[in-house]
Every structure is written in structure tokens, then in C-alpha cells.
Length: 129
Image (tube, rainbow, N blue to C red):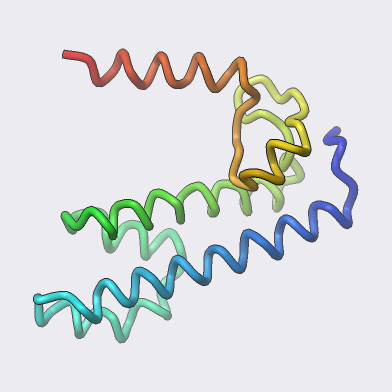
């Protein structure tokens, strides 16, 4: 069981939801200021999309700012899902408790330091030529 109490989890959830809303607004702005006419039309519909639908919808658009925001949105969504299933504050790999200090610095932290090192090495090795 996580060392976080219900009040702390509720505070993290509020913070994550606020961040999610800010990122959705930033994504909408990217579409509104795009040179593509179809993006202007799409911007009107983005607010009605679920997070999963928004991620899927934007997956084929090559825009560095959009990709950066979508990656943040994915991390927030994963953290909110962790809260929903009662696993927030636990490492997604080994299920050890995450340090509250780490979560306060980055509420989307998913792995303990040891597992994060392993994950980063694996990711690096997958991208190596």
C-alpha cells in the first residue's frame, strides 16, 4: 500500500487535472495557430475528445510542440489512471513506494530510481543503431 494518504492523493489528482487542462488548452492553441485549414476545423472539436481520443487523433501530426504536449498528456493520463486503480505512488515496474519528494517534484513519476535507470537503459538500447 502506498505511503500517501487520501488527502495527498486528492491533492495530486487536482494538480494533475489542472495540468491536463492546461496542456489541452496548449494543444488547442497549436491547432488554432496552425497554417493548415483542417487544423482550424479540428480545433473546434478537440474539447469534446477524451484524452485517449485526443492522443490518437494527434498521433500522425508531425509538430514538435504538439508531440511534446502529447507526451506530457500521456504521462498525466497514466498518473490519473494509477490514482483510479489505487496504485498511485507505487513504481509501475516493481510496485515499491515512490518517495513523496519525487512525486512533489514531478507528480507524473512512474518509476522508482532503480527501475527508471533500467527503463532508460532499455529505451536507449532499443533506439541504438
